[in-house]
Image 1 (cartoon, rainbow, N blue to C red):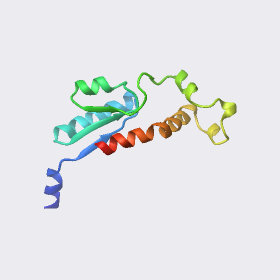
Image 2: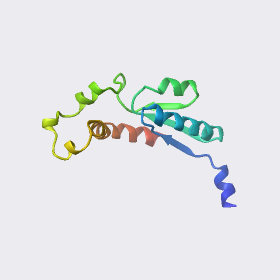
Image 3: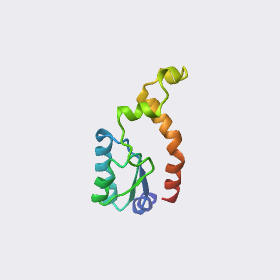
Image 4: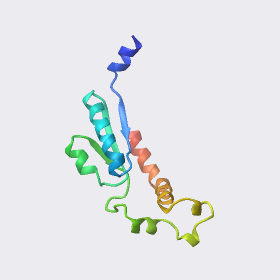
Length: 118
């Protein structure tokens, strides 16, 4: 009986994919199926790279990151300290991972505000 109640309950599902085809495309297939089952699926994006595509497919998409700043190698080096300025812990991880942590700290409050509104 509990299984029947759970099966009929509409869930709110937050999806926050990495902006890369290998991460995004499998989630898109899964989210399409979940939406078709009646669940409320919303995407929360770090960049606007996939926003238009999601809107065309009928999904809601919220960009919590910085618009107009696509991810590139040059951008990574703009947003993290130079190697000489990094502390010893930062030097142990790749620049891409360090960039992710730096951005996470900056963008997390906006992401959480949008998630709370969902």
